[in-house]
Image 1 (tube, chains in turn blue, brown):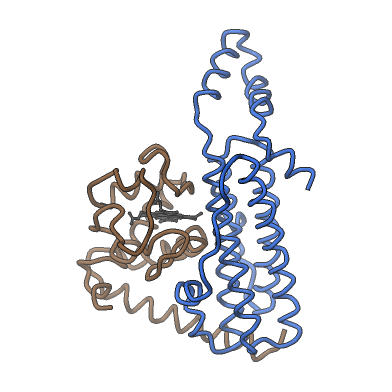
Image 2: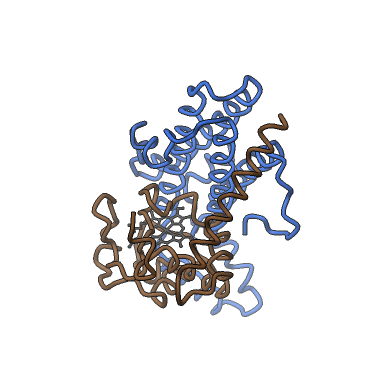
Length: 190
Length: 139
């Protein structure tokens, strides 16, 4: 939580400190240029966080609705609810950041929307649910990494890295449960 | 977990792959291998936000090649993308994936695909789910 709270401030000085290290060798003029560039680049951080928040809302709804389907065995349900809890904690961190940055956190869609969007009504078995969750978790792990470049604040980038790692654990657990081999090529989510 | 679950999953994956191979083979103009490789990349990089046939965090992408930009009526686009104009060609999709904020600053999509080879495969996949190749039009 401490990490997230620090990230929330959107402290530009952290970013500039990093830029300064890179340009130290070229002296004062280079450093001034780096500062100007960093200041000129508008921050999209709130927008990036809002999109991430929308992904977390969807994941929470998927686990919640699937959890009530009666299709999951007790042991699978337990794992699903643990993962849902992680997504809720991600949601809370991201929503808090948006608020602290002066925005209004994006709200979840209705359950009816999620059921239609994710075709939850067509899921007929535990394996259907596990397959969908595996796909969503893989996508989420990858989406967090894929958006780090768009972030200006390194503390938020670090938060994205750590959320991505959580999603990767979910993916791995589900993937192993399904008995699917781990891909041989590295950079699974790149 | 339970063996029945694992078997069912493998069977359903095999079935999906089989159907996909047939569908792609039926499309002229796109190498089936490219579209299949592109689909795998799409599954990793895009499915957190997109489905082919449903609006999610981002709009549905069926028929996106040849479609006017920001034209799915059921999806709420950013003002930035709405004012971009024109249609989605393979070249413009490549440009989009290489930097959404350069192309439409303020857009709600921030994911970027840096590798040109990956972009080419993903665009081949998007073509395979678009008209005029045919099947995508028959919903």
